[in-house]
Every structure is written in C-alpha cells, then in structure tokens.
Length: 164
Image (cartoon, rainbow, N blue to C red):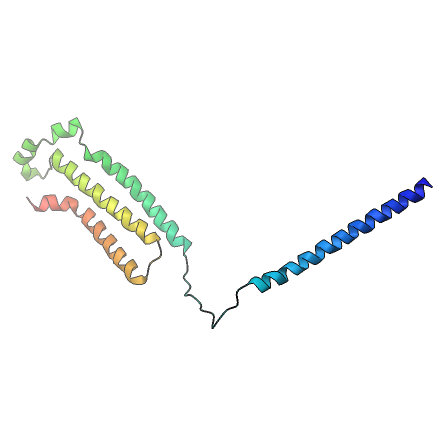
C-alpha cells in the first residue's frame, strides 16, 4: 500500500511541476510580443547617419610616435640644465672670445634645449589631437602644423650659427 501511495504522490508532484514549467514557457514566449507592442512606431523614413571608419593601425602608429617623442622630451629635459663641467668648458666669456671656432656657450645650449622641449611638447599635443576623428580639412591643417614644428625643431641649431 505504501508503494502505491508513493507512486501516486510522485505522479502528482510530476504533473504539478510540468504544469508550472509549461506556464513559465508560455509567459516567456509572450514577453517578446509585449516588447514589440512597447516599441515606438517610426514616423517617416529612416535616416542613416554617415559611417566613418576607425583605423586602429593609424592610432597605434600615433601612439608609437608619441612614446618615442616622450623619450626624446625626457632626454632633452636633462640638457636644459647644464652641468658644472659644461659651464666650465663653454663659459660665455670664452665662447665669445673664440667665436671663430664655432662653439656655443652653455647658456645658449640650455636655451636651445628648453626651446626644443617646448616645441616637442607642442608636437605631442598636436599628435594627441590627431588621434580624435576629425574632418579632412582639420587633419591636413594639423599635419601641416606638425611638419612646421618638426622643421623648426630641426633648424634650432642652425639659427645660432647663422647669427654669427
């Protein structure tokens, strides 16, 4: 008798659980219909925005250039403050007396290094702004500015020699 009542109880529990499972499945299938009803209806034609392409390789290249520039800036910052040996060897009075040899004074070299650091920091700012998407006119203007900064930085040493 106990086995028959255990079988009946098992079947009753199985039927109840099956009914609960079927009800849950029905409510899940009914939910997408509710979402479709809640979605706003479009009025008029669908507008497509212009697409733009993010070029990961260009950003990686700019990041690499920025890292190299950071190393150069750190190296140049060390040259801004001239050492005692440099001050002794490239004294202002000695370099003016021996100007025909073509040397520069320690103060002039530190001024050139400070100017070069400032130009490289400006170049870094321009490179950072090139990473953000812009229209073609702004990109070409930034590239021209970048080229001009690089040319000025390269010609810093020649400016001191031309003035003599």
